[in-house]
Image 1: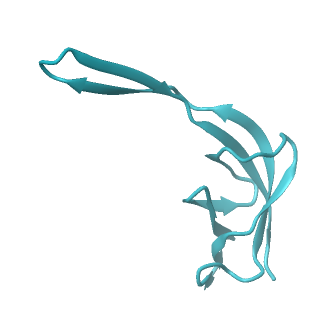
Image 2: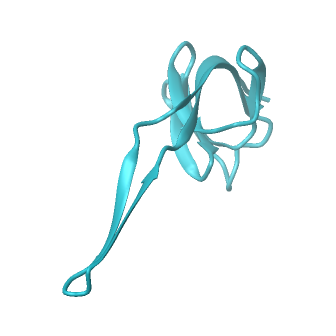
Length: 104
């Protein structure tokens, strides 16, 4: 049994016991949260697709860690003008562990 959930504008496949990283959520490590934007629930042969969300379905997850991703560099460059700029960016992430899939 699995569900497709939406968080931060992206979609993730949620199965009980598995974990995945989403864009930073403002929750403490160890706290339990509910993801209400469930787009699809599949239980063997039975598939329920929401319009846009499955009514009454939630996914309960535990916040495992808050961390920052690898640093990326962004360059601006204009040839023949001696113009070069370098900026760095590190994205913040939250790792979630799926505890339970709740159907209404």
